Image (cartoon, rainbow, N blue to C red; front, side, top):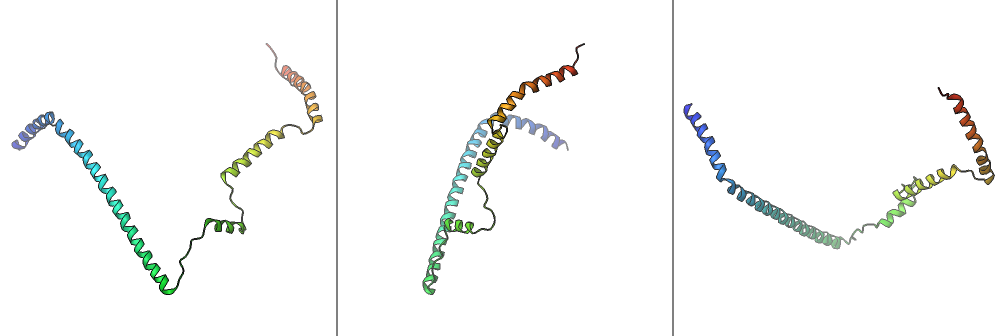
Length: 152
């Protein structure tokens, strides 16, 4: 037990001495770590390139095999339909077409414009009558306020 305690006390002192001179080693360790990280990244990139090349070659071989089967049995290669053909399907659609963001924004702007103009009367005669009634309404509202309020 005494040996363990002695080792603990001396060991702590040795660690502090090593820490004083060990700063250079840590700097080298950081540089080595950066170099290792760069090397690992490069290795990953190369592995990814090899994998892509392998899959490309496999797909070419498969396509050659498919072509030999097509030639043997007289089959034609399927051609993918273009997006224009899909647009034709939308025309025969029973339901409504979804509106784009631009269409929705345009409709919202039109509604706002309609709301702004709805406040104004459409005829000039309506406008003149409302303007002529305005001073009378103001006087009536001021009269009501003065009746309710009393100065003390």
